Length: 239
Image (cartoon, rainbow, N blue to C red; front, side, top):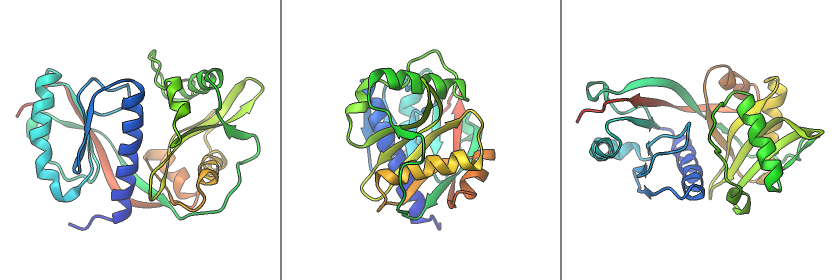
């Protein structure tokens, strides 16, 4: 087993973001060395369990079995290193993606971009995020996230409307880039999101994960692919 350490750091940063999200929604979770485990129904686009340690993947099925009893067999799993074989347990691959990594770069906030600073701006940001590819009727990002020192909502605003944005979350060893959106996705918009993220902590590498066309935009914005992950889902887990 040869897993890039950078992918492991990216997975742990993603779990830090999960911890912030679950806390903001008052949802119960356990953060263990080998997995982030949610004990309440996660928000849309979030998994019930995220793996964190490739050397302890064998511990995950027993946790999934417990969760299956709680959620009547309907589960989502982030298999962070593509190590789990769960087809016989009823899981199917929803999509595959790549962990991405960009070396530290000293950047400034791109022209027109800024940090979201109040509740109304956050509502406007979330409205644009939903409109540009993440539809849901549920409020996803509570205002309490703005008070965290490790979370930053970033966006480009034209008038009262956000036309591009992303989320940055800091960990000890890196800063995460996620939820990138733009009215017209392009290399420039992704590059701006990455630079906005770097401007928050220029001494840290930027990490995240992307798939499809967005992965291509990341590769054109000085990122490297450092590992594979996949999202698995089932409506009736069997253990």
